Image (tube, rainbow, N blue to C red; front, side, top):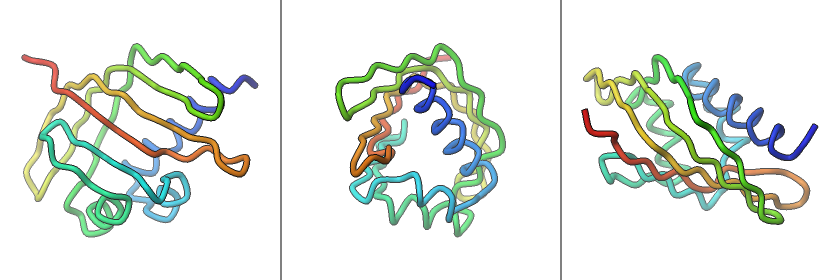
Length: 123
């Protein structure tokens, strides 16, 4: 398996944990220094993002990914792509179409998700 395939498998695990509200599984994938910048420009840390999923503030219903590309630079992997996300935020349903940049870093032999930056695709 290539590093690119490993990263895409980790991405699938992360998105699966998000939709399943599996905060324990998600916590294992997230770097302690996570910077999660939503398309609304709201920024979460690892702690606030995991708590948002645990509390039900974020309820991911469906996530579809497309045009994914992984680029590896030593112990850093960048993932770009598009996503269609059905989510409830504070009980309000939202349909998001996004372009995103994800960053994974390898430390002590393990890949951790350290950054998300997304931009809404205009309707």
